[in-house]
Length: 526
View (cartoon, rainbow, N blue to C red):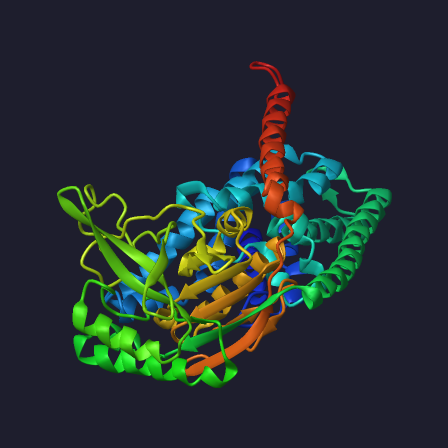
């Protein structure tokens, strides 16, 4: 019994680690199509309670290995002891596992009592609980299963219909089909029921057919979008990557040097004639327009470029008896006039504000700031000449609904500015950069990404990365980008597919629970 349990736990840990390896930095994306097999194997023959426990173990292995880069962030910038930082990551992984993964595996075993139901329900329930992860408790849709396939350009084109969740469904369906195919070959049961060869062949055939359809659709869409982009109007954008160390960023002694570096890098792009120059999140490490000397230095410096700038800087505004602080991006014209601004709408818990601080005063923020940030309005676009810009700051780019809302509001160019200096050269910046590619594909918009220490770069409307910069290096790159304006089905309808999967998951669990109750022997009977 103990030996069997150890083998099951080893399989669960292996499954979690294989899934992590499918994402950046390692990016062995092919592993995603097999990574869930040990998880499914461990769920066979279990009760819902045991399935919950096993899903929990799988989730801890996956999330701890995926998000390991949070530990150096907490140690270096949060000034927390290493053991406490490890404990916090473990606790975070436990929460993600207990709220999303374990309920999914528990519900799957409850609802998938027959091989056919299990084969059909696994991809539905996986996607349903991924969607739940996107908004429950402010949401954390980081590294969803579909993101593992970003290197497969043709495959991710499906997301302009069903979002990243459609790609997740394909991968989960393939894992389920292979699993039941293996059971049939080994003459094993599923929850005591025979897995027939006919079911296994049908499952593999349907999964392969869906992948082939998605691949064919992707090839057609890439060719179509490329033709549209070739005849679309363009705008030339420059990205400035200052590579300012996080330990120096908010030090007043380095303020003038930071401004000078960003100005010099911006002016170095003049021969490429950029129409818009984008600086990263908080590239101006002071209250722009409020602190006069550094503001004057910045505006006088960029005046020589004689073009438009989008500059990240903290801001504050009087609000009643107090002050509201914002993580802001300013759009500045050639004469130094502010033409508009965007305030970050989706804030990072414990990074930009402290939830429950009235009840848990010992919890602080990692971000160096005098107070919590306030959230700006969602979906606000900036009017730049006759073009609407859809700006997102840092963490917001991982939420598909934000980019979609900007596209709905007329944004023809998506821009994300960030500061990933917190994460050094770990997998964090690579994972963060990769997520932005799906936002371009979902909405068929070119995307600009400016990061303080990298990775900066451009993404075209089919998800190709263009001119990506190196991590921890100064850079100033510029290129023309196409401006498309057609709405995709995803832009119009959003996550209806994922929401439908969540609804079906709930119905399936309810049906399975009622069936289990009816099948129990009545009290006093054997």
